[in-house]
Length: 246
Figure 1 (cartoon, helix red, strand yellow):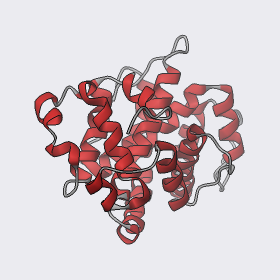
Figure 2 (figure 1 turned 90 degrees about the vertical axis):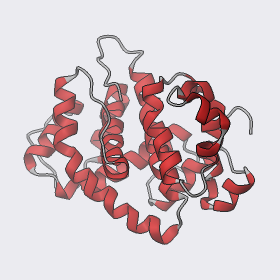
Figure 3 (figure 1 turned 30 degrees about the vertical axis):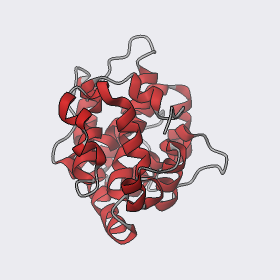
């Protein structure tokens, strides 16, 4: 497998700490079939994951198509196809010709949408406030997808906030620990407050995973973490933005 335009640049610009949870998903979630875990390059260089980006990308793609046979033979589709597979499994709402990034965001928004009814009014207000959505005093019973998408279009940082909220909850559920938080106190409070409700939705996903097949145990959290890294890297180009460092 060569360079993947939707995945390789994200991994190449990520730090070792950025990649820590992703590598954990690959070597723990795919413990029975992980080629990365038994590879010489992993044994030699971990936890300096940036030294074996190619192998990490290959491992993610190997789980595509939800087939363990892919992992064994070292095959697999493009990262875009892996994302599409996850989006389809989670029944997300996205355009047929959506970009990889748009499909990633549809996955993140679907998980928040599913958790919305379990949020308290205070949690909903906190969510709105963190995104800078106007009229946050009005609390809709149905997840306001259009308003949130508008906030994302106006501020790329809003997309990062949603991404790290879901990625943190996923890490807690799958790895047993959340992402390391940085200096943005307001964002840290929002993530902490909403991790519980999001976590319950993610726990429910594992019922689907158990039925669908073991490869989704790797592809779902991996796609969510890559989505977070993509939004983190985009947000880091904005002025006056403090980034949480996973």
